[in-house]
Length: 314
Image 1 (tube, rainbow, N blue to C red):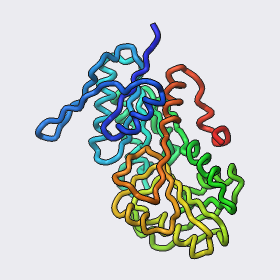
Image 2: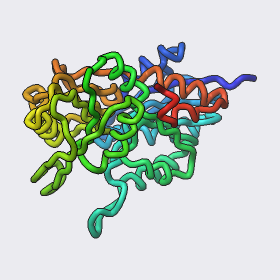
Image 3: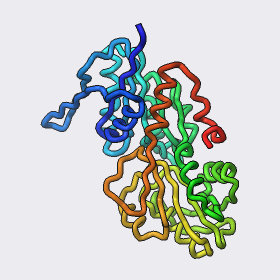
Image 4: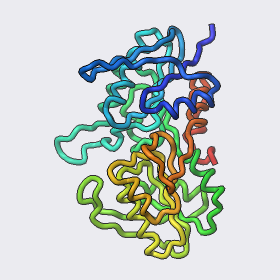
């Protein structure tokens, strides 16, 4: 008897999950979240899972209930005798806590990996982890997709005459450098010094942007303070236009207001995190086709190595 694929969604990723299921060619499975008066909740599946490949789609964005819901759904699927339980986590929360950057702090990304494993997950599919080494925190296979699969074709169709890729900080140099290599463009880097998290003291530019069409590349836009400041600096240094590309639109604090008032002509993001409200400068590209394709390949035991290599998606 052939193994059946069943796709379910957590509360945080319902819209994206519906798109993925549609691209895959089947409806979302039925599940229920029952809330109790004290704030506790319980998840349950409203159909049989025995012997099936179960894919649960949930970004672990705040509040922490979204992570807890994912863990409970994984546990419920294992107890319902699913053959394989795969967590599809478009945005992996706590990924910025990937190391001890000061004494006596937790390594949140490792803790989340342990929790997912303890819940019974067999495999994880995610996109643009903040740090690649997080894959090594897991004792189960991790399929790490790249947002470049959807951003590069879009940037190509813009046909910007004097394209220059830029990194908003030194930590993102490798990511921006990969874009620059395959788009055959130059690379510039912003060097920033932080006072504390989400607050930059000083920013300088390494490279020349005079008369260039600059595209800043990052994995996450959180408060949008750093990236909008970088965009303003590009124009001050003589850039013709400035755009930003970011996989995960966290958009906390005053992010929407900062982007609306920024020098950006466009901020291009994916739909790994649903937007809280509309913003005229924000363009959302869907990642649903990419995730649907990976789900199909995982189910059919086919290679997905092509999705790991930047050159194969251009």
